[in-house]
Length: 316
Ligand code: AMP
Ligand code: MG
Image 1 (cartoon, protein in one colour):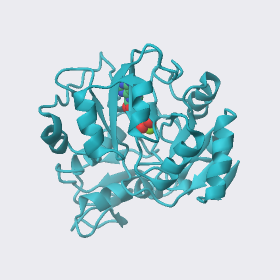
Image 2: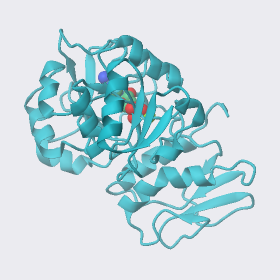
Image 3: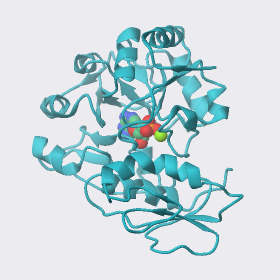
């Protein structure tokens, strides 16, 4: 495996690896993705194996142009409106698969729907245009763990199974995309992200949010325990208890501060890297986290923190 700084040559080499069925990790504006040609079942199987991801957890398909979606899914007026407003950008849309959709059924976990997104990052877009194939690309982390927002955050165990990592620097947004299911009426928010519900509703009208039923797993982004560091978390902390590392925000100061100025977008882009930095079981027993206001991208930050704090099996 090689780590290559982003360049036209590196992107050409990565495109070749993908065309031959290999895996490439690449930067997007949200987090680093672990990509495979979505039309090659064997390649997609390597993603699930490398991440230890349950095969019932479908993958997002990344496209280089809005027009690619017509060959994969059955778009409607709401899709057109949202894609024209928010793409390229951190909004994933779930649509019905076309009967002749060339994407491997493994990508969509055997289901009738497909999640699509056009990333807003020059490296991701150049790579997609060079491969000229839709890329299945979940976050480049072991299943259930914290998503990487820098090339160096990609776990060694995962990296050893990848043909190449393209280093495009830190991710601007830092949280995974908003996921919106357009197969229901009204549409359903499956995962909050940088594109907020208000902006979506301004474009297409009312959206259903937050029916979290443990029985119906509509999107594993809804899994109770996910995005988790090794150490347990204590949320809404305003002080530091013995054995704790405190991750501050605004006036609540700690070992690190997500944003001293209290800027939520800055906090989002720092969140995963700072959780990693404090995730040291040899030094701390718990990571305590300052309260994050539940507005704008703070809603997505709190969603990830709740899941990271949820009870979970210890997998080390
Ligand atoms: P990740 O790529 O690891 O950020 O996770 C992708 C998210 O998109 C997960 O929460 C998936 O469950 C969700 N997703 C992908 N495809 C679909 C689909 N067809 N229907 C519903 N959710 C999906
Ligand atoms: Mg993920």
